[in-house]
Length: 274
Image 1 (cartoon, rainbow, N blue to C red):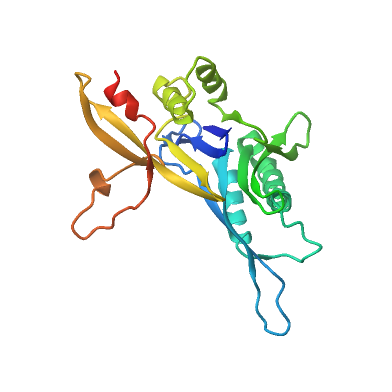
Image 2: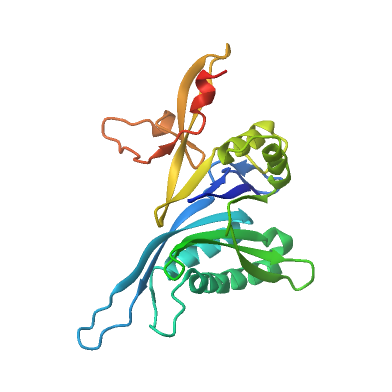
C-alpha cells in the first residue's frame, strides 16, 4: 500500500506521497514512483481539404496511485499511451475532465476486473486524477476506487476536492489523519512523520510531491536535511522519488548529466528553529 495526501488549499491543488513499494513478506523498495504527470493531447478531426488537425487540448494531468503497484502501473502505462493520441468530434465529444475521466475509467475498470480475478484483493488500487477542464475552466480532481462490499467488485469514480480539503489514502491513512488532527498540517510533514514513526511498514522511503502550476501538473523534488549526532545541521538532502540526488552513485562527475528538477523546501524552518 502507501500513503497519498490529496489537497486543495485556495487555488493550490497538490498530491504528496511516500515512495515505498512492498512485495508481501519478500521485502520492499524505497524508490517507487507514485505521482506522475500524464501528458494529454486531444486533436480536432482531420481537415479534408488540408489533411491537418489542430491540437485543441495540450495539458499535463496529475496522477497519484495507491495500492497494487501491478494494477496501478498497468493502468498508468495504458492511460499515458492512449491520452496522447485521441481526437474529439465537435458537438459530440465531451471535451472536459468528465469526458477524459470516463475514458480513463474504462481502462481502470477493465484492468481492475482482470487483475482482481487473478490476484483477488492484492489487485486493489485507487487512482487520484486531476487536470484542467476547458468547460469549467478550472482544475478538477477525480477518485477512482473499488466497492468491494459485494462480489463481483464494482469499480467506481467520483469528483473530489471541489472545495478546500485534505484527503488521505492508503495503508497510512488512519495514522496520517491522527497526525493532521493533532496539529501537523503540511502534507509532506505528515508523511515524513508517518515514515519516521515506523508503525506502518508499507509506508517508507522518501517524499514525493506534485502540484498544478497554472493548468499544468508538475512534479518537484523535495529538500530534506540531516543532522550530526549532536543535533547540529549537517547537510541538505535533495530527494526525488525516494532517491537522494547528487550523492553517491548520482553525484555529478565531470562528464555526467545534471538532473535538473525544481525542489520544494518544506522543512527549512525546522533547521534553524529547534
